[in-house]
Each structure stands twice: as C-alpha cells, then as structure tokens.
Length: 82
Length: 229
Image (cartoon, one colour):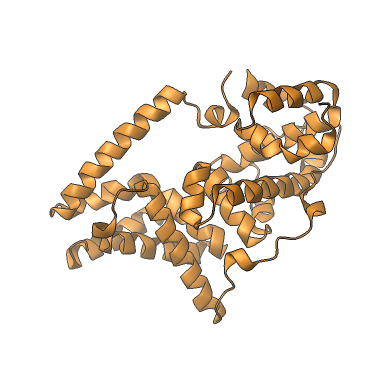
C-alpha cells in the first residue's frame, strides 16, 4: 500500500519509539525518502524530544535535593516506615 | 541500527536490561533492610528518583515551589507506606503514582474545588493533532539549551499542553518511563497512553516549529544523522 502524508503523521510517534511493525516501518521509510515535508516533521518532532529530555530544560530548583533529604531525615528520626 | 529511544539514553539494550535487573535486586534488598530497621537507607533508595518525583509533581502543578513541596510530601508518604509496596510494579512506578496523587491533592486544595476526573476531560478536535508542515526545518542543537529563552520556550510549550497530555508526556518523554509504566502510574490503558503521547508530541512540534525556524542555525539533517548513525 502506498502511504500518504496523513498516514505517516498518524504513526509518527510510534515510529520514533520504534514500535511500528516491520512492514509499516518499511513503508514509512519509503515515503520519507521522497517526502521532504514528512522528513522535516519527523526531524523536528525528534529534535523537540531530544531538547525536552535534556536536564537543562527542566532544571530542579537550587537546593532541592538537600532540602528533600533534610525533611526526610526529620521524618526518619520521628517514625519507623509503615 | 539502534532504536531512537535507546540512542537517547545512550545505552544498549543489554546494558539497560542488566542495570534494570541489578537495580531491582538492589532495591528489593534495600527495601527489606529499611523495613527491617535500617531506615537511614531510605535516603539511598529514593536518591535516583528525586528528579522523577519532582517532575511528576511539576507536570500537575506547573509551579516550582508547589512541586517541590508536593515532592517532599510524596517522599515522606512513600516512606510511611513502604510496607505496603508489594513489588508487583517497579518501585519507581509506585513512587511516581504517589507523587502524581500528591500533586493532584495539592491542586485540588489550591483550587478549592474537586477536579474533574482526568478521563472526563474532552480530548479536543483531531485538527489540533496535525503536525506543522514545513520544508526548511532547522535543527536546534543541544548547545542552544544554554540560551535561557530556548529553555523557557520549551517549558512554556509543555505547560500549555492540556493536563491529560502533559502528564503522559512528562512521564514518558521527560522521565523516560516506558508506555506500560506510564500507563500503570496514571491508571490508564497502554492504548490511551500511546494516543495521548502522540498528540502531545505533535502539539509540541507544532508550537515549537516557529521558534526553530526563526532562531536556529541551518544545520539540516544534524539530528537525524545523530540519531540514526
């Protein structure tokens, strides 16, 4: 079956995760070879995910870990685990 | 060829399985020792998940101070209820479930009203989940994250996602949980998680395309080569 762009878009997330079956993967890749728009959509979506996953994007508040363990230490001194 | 998600965490399947098995064995032993009286070990048990707990709370509360308070409460709650952890799910999934519940409770309190069940939220029109078509995509390299405005643009895009999509996205793509873990932590089916994840990713692509087209240097194909090399 010849895939059109909308078919490819519908599977883009699973394609990125590598969870589409082999046949569909092959069809998507064949489409991507000749479709600049879908290739750009795939690249841009992946790019967004790579940037999002970087720890600099969602930084922890300064001192978060220290405050967390300090609070926990108080709790450990007060009670045994349930 | 490696799958992109494996590339992202920079490890092989074998390394991943090995560390998962070792990690789970160590965790099981740690938990038994904590319940046996070595309670100081709880610090070590949660250390690898500090970020995960915070981001889970942040995905609901969208406020750093509130998320930090909720994360502390979640960790304390996990300690108090450690005896009820049965080991059916991974410890991390159990902990994230507690963190998400803590976040929801805090949000309810802040709003002063009961929230709708997240499954009752209307899921919008299909048109919203169509990616932004483009032909001259300019990849943004990771070094660009040094720029505050890029980090802010990414965070804003996530915070503007509807709640049901943001929560799935936060667990799967910010914390690298797999589909099944995400589903367990949110009390959803794997199918629903996949649909929401797809929509979240497309909405983010759509929102961030404008930013990339106007600000990123022309390095066409950079990420594709990196991920598929």
